Length: 393
Image (cartoon, rainbow, N blue to C red; front, top):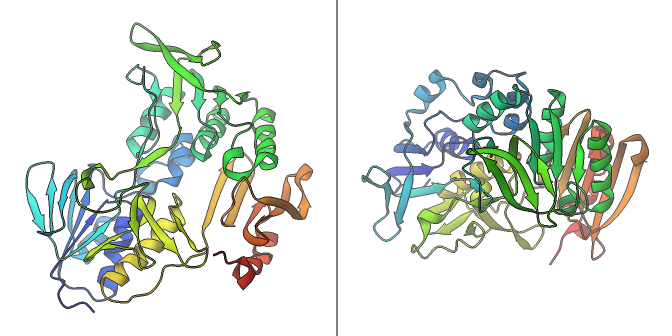
């Protein structure tokens, strides 16, 4: 273990941050351990926000990652509502939004991402993003008033919100820039299936569409104007058009923060500085490229690797990426890297029956496998991703 570590700071109190703190203690680190969280809430799980929390099938407390006794056992200097605003790697200090500075010997950055917003009209009453638990609770309160909802963005957050809204009986329109929802993530064939899934449940789709502006009346949302001039009436909107790694506070530090904190295969960004989770972009030894993954599973696994390597383990982080999405009665799961430009082949089941497994192949190498309501069959194809032929570069 690195004997020079007397104080470790973890910036970001969500899944990755808390997992990093727990790993440090589990691996024997006994020094001072500070966990900074920009939100005033204690760490909670984010995947339920667009599903169980928004639907009301879970109370907010159900999303909590740990209870009070767990934090006490960690002997943790936990600081919710403390935002890191600057880093000085030379002096090894982190400055907080209250003006105080904290010294560190080791730093793990798990600051997450910030949702994109539309350039105009975002301050209108009725316009929402979904990143925090408070965001989800505000949106749920609005949906219970049965508004006419427009969801801007055909990615995972947008499609999950649309599915949950329809389950609540809310009139919903989904607007996506690509040819179909999730087409820009999973390919057009899969995107068409996602489109059919939503239209079967009453969602109105506008594909190949881009929002020009939000239209207001007396400071309330009244509609959305598309770039082709079409105006869609809506008194509620969720903007789910992607996110940006939360790295503004790292400008001028010398760290490469192009699309996240750039790390090596050990999750190290600079001497004594590591990163994990949504904010981290690292060199993946298996796939021979840099990746940044906004997946819950990766947040936890990478946090473990970063904490262990800070303590001196020197183990490359080379996971098999995994993500899932629940929409209506469909569970979509994928392992590896599934890109829209890959050659996609159905290897089990039938897409028409909405139960199948698809293989993603790039340059002759299998890089990903995806299952739609086929968890057992999906697992049977994982060996294809572990063979040398699956490696790139």
